[in-house]
Length: 415
Image 1: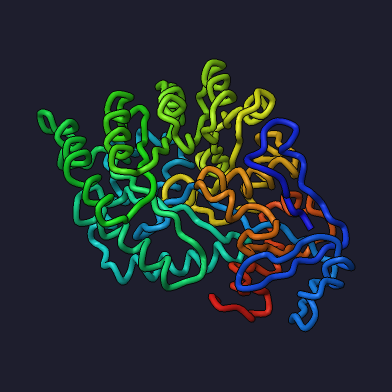
Image 2 (image 1 turned 30 degrees about the vertical axis):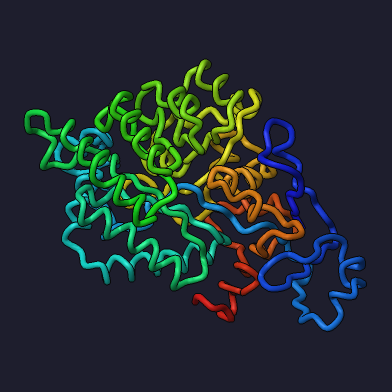
């Protein structure tokens, strides 16, 4: 059992401390962890007498994965662009021709809420099947008032109607939509729409906890990003940021300055950015699935970030264009082989540190008394085998708030 017990997010050498209990047990009551530790001691507790017993027969138990960066609601794949990328077209070349994010926007606007919801529900079943128990979900494929509110409303519905927790983020500032893109003053008018119309309404209706911006070449400038994030913060939406993915913009330093919960991607960070993150409480969330899918050679400098003392997290970046994966185990594999993280560091980054980036580390991310009983059980003998078997899913069972939501024999509440 990997408990990851301890206080707060992990930095540096502490990323490797998994709090392993070799013959462990967890006692669950009313969806929360009542006891966790050596099996003989837990079973001897008076509270354990009469409890229903589930023997996982020597499998590895760890906290449920916390996927802290996804684009859950979208209408369709972009498989046609995948083929173009293989032929040599770059992400930005495809975007300039109306592909990329704008392609997904066009498809989402034409889709019904029922179709979007059904697609997302199917995805959530897959998340659970890979051991994920909490999913951050961004808007950003609507880019108009009606469509953005539709996405955020679906986040709320899905959060109520299935067991995985969905943490909602407003990403109206994903890219400038086509109707504003090539008109005089269009980008500025779109930012004004976000700041003066959408953000206030999102906050008033409590449709999101966070406000995110894609600050990069071809998306939003540093000044525009600051304007949007400040408006979000003024309405109670904590900042997150897509930072330094395609180019170095200074977005990381802005994230640190604003006390952002997380800045994500970071392939193009410089030494000053790494030093700033190391001194901050902003999580450096790395998304190696995106670089892998795009066939890029430059991944985020995880080792430099860890060695400097930054809080490093991992997430799938599940989306139809650049990272169409729901598998946190595959992301762990990429973190180990491409980012040179150890299996222990990767697991910590995908659990307690990811929970911290969503401001839920006191509720989830580790197996400790009082926390929610969010667990993933893997049919392996050694936790290092989870990333070792790349592209293979050994998740045997997933538990959310003490309820089985996925099990390989189908005995669950979500499948």
